[in-house]
Image (cartoon, rainbow, N blue to C red):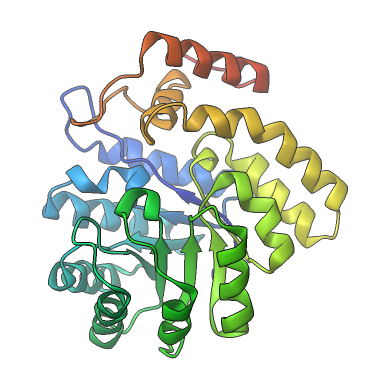
Length: 296
């Protein structure tokens, strides 16, 4: 159901820091044109932590409307409050999203039993396909393969975005869950490697700026052209590095601003790249050929 190159979409703001709905719709249209298979609004890359509840809902609505069923929309609807996550997930369903992406509760540091009960409660409350999101580098909690296996018993928990960076843990999830739980890479560096292990695609930060190339890499893999997939993978490495030169999504949003696709506008506590990091980012973009058509 959910496979291929899926973008973790940025949320554009105007120069005053207000949600820019027109820029958001243009980004969705660009991804349709570039062959992106799916789109995630209101994830970490979309600065969901600083969106108001109303903004969060509106971003999902705009993306669903702009996508017009031409690609899958997986709405970020997680929270460290189970009740709030249920509310956001209900809205995602009502807005017409194809699925919901649910991050493990951050800051609370729940136990494995708490993680199970949190996701089980959302699965029981909202009849929409749900994708778990395990990213301990952001949340400080790591959902263990045993917990993922328990949650795979729910028919509407269909996949997990794995961003642990652990090949062993990801492999254990695939071994335990098999076809009951699709695995989606949540770390651009491991995209191709996880496909080889049985993953079905990725949710990517770098796809914000090179969507066609990441889609092409998936298509090459799907066609059995491993040489081409490898070629694309290694060509992207320095760009992947640049996307995380400082806290994401600062670099990717800066890159999109350089490309003229969004205003250079971040919400505190995120702030501008340091001069040294900006220089490195521009160098990586230039090496990849992304500065040729830039407007800024």
